[in-house]
Length: 334
Length: 242
Image (cartoon, rainbow over all chains, first blue to last red; front, side, top):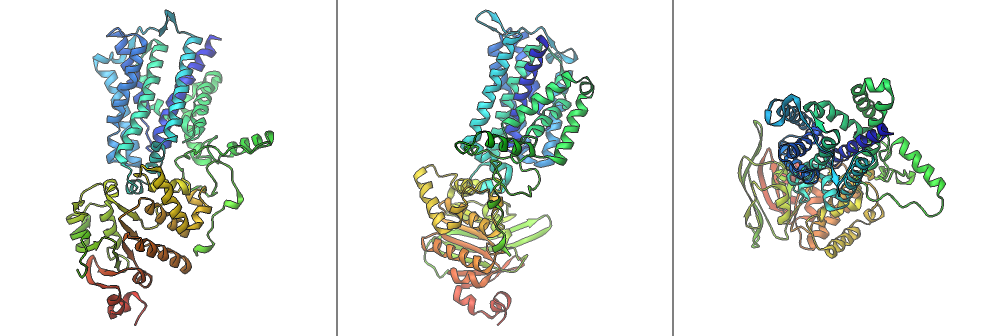
């Protein structure tokens, strides 16, 4: 039982990482392969404050969120100059640099990492096992709420314009640089909180926990579940985090799994298994509609769709319900 | 200028280069408030480059752009929008993954008064009733003509003083071209200044007061709409022969 609780705690933390990357990549279209750097910055901030300055978990957690958010805004600056594949390379570089700093600067504990972190306490009661799982799930729910809130406000629409066409976005009056930095800051801050939880859950952290391969893992969870949705990154993180724990074969080839998932999803289902208009999601919605014939299911609220991976040949509404009557009207356009 | 109104837009010896290639060689022109002006020219004359420089998508190598008394030559695009400039870009460039209504709301991104947003949306829906029918549809599922209408509607949502229109008739069926120019005419009658860049000189000269002819990055001819219509050179090149 203890093992299951522990696996679920990790899965919840990774679901937060996937959701936070989703804000940056799924909403604002900024593809980052360096997300583990923000995870690491949050973990190290929290760990250093706890071990060197003797802070308790709660203020260290808040500090980790804030510090990582600020780092995110700063490390997002390259996105103002470079786009697309060059941005991907830049974020990869950031990941390597951050890990190198953790590894080679003595202040950060070097290769020996930081050990001896205490579990959080609340009213004199130490959160471990189920207690810590509850904390991780609570943070996951908060992240879900933030993701949903961002998507519903003006910022969500502005992020969508930045994702789709930066020039046109600017012509609407959207300050593209500002919204890119917002996306990096929000995304990083949420990942920083995940880092703090991770550090205090494990009790010790090492630079390699935040290496580039972890960034690939987080990205594969988002892509597997469905970029741009809320359900996708959560389901992706739980499946891809839990699977290697229980399937011995998969566990030995964890990183092969992550890489393979990325390649296969891009080839066959770029919108993710649960993305809008994905094969499985359409089946699930059809099933749901049959089970509940009563009132029409309310159209999914303005879900900003995935970062439009490739051109979707089937024109359909983003709520995923394809209506044959809504097909392209090309007739008058010849 | 024959017009005694204050110029809203002044372009002064604008030079734009792409690497070593010079696209505009010192273009000067003016648009007064409420005036409709055409830029005619063949493919590659520099018409779209001019629009891009006015919107702020390319930064000129030399020259000045003054809008409502402010030098905006180097201002970022979103700041120009704030000042009352809006654009209907070449090809429309609507947000393909967003709905028609979301596209329109984004056009009014800078408008904080919800009543005014609703009012303008009504106006756009009256201008293009088909957009109202399709308001929940994702923009990518619209036809090319509908996307152009959406692009115009989106720009109108800004409530602009000056609307830049780039090759709006390109690839449209004749019937739609008429509809689009009727809409531009209506905007002009409501006091919106227009700068229309077009290959379709016939329709354009129907709407505008004045025009310039751009060739190889230079203004080679300027005049009122009727002067241009009578000009043998314009007739040869842009109105389908003498």
